[in-house]
Structures are given as C-alpha cells and as structure tokens.
Image 1 (cartoon, rainbow, N blue to C red):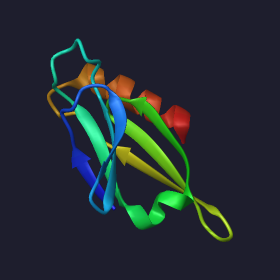
Image 2 (cartoon, one colour; image 1 turned 90 degrees about the vertical axis):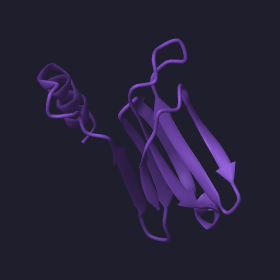
Image 3 (cartoon, helix red, strand yellow; image 1 turned 90 degrees about the horizontal axis):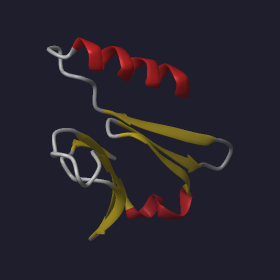
Length: 97
C-alpha cells in the first residue's frame, strides 16, 4: 500500500499493472491544487469491500479480512499556511472517525 499526493481532477480508480490506484481530487473545472491517492496491490482486489471519496483530501478503502474489516484512510493534511482550510479539514475528519 502506498499513499500518494495527487493532482488528478475528479475521483476514480485506475488499474495499472499489478496495482490499483484510488484517487480523489478537485472537481474537473477547478484548478488542480490538491488531491490524495492510495495504491493497493491487485492481490487485495477481491478483499475490497467499500471505498469512499470523502473529500479531495480524504479517501477511505475498507478491506474484508478473514475475521474483521480493515479500514484504510488516506489523508492529505492541509498546509500550515492555510488555517481556515485546516479547521474545516479537521472538522470533516472528526465526523468520519
């Protein structure tokens, strides 16, 4: 599993060789300035139970394991110079945890 910063627009899933990339970014009509991504090996593809694009900075993938479910959150935190964004970002994060 890899976490990546991403400037792709929109949201989606892209298969590439032995991997699957989940990405969440700004709307297509906006300037590409932020986004997040998560890369999983294809061997986990059959275990993917759910994925949610919560915002352009937060996405979640759940994997069904033998006895439980593993929730993986990919979070691209706000930059230090943007306090207003930081406040709304962490409010969103608190709502999902």
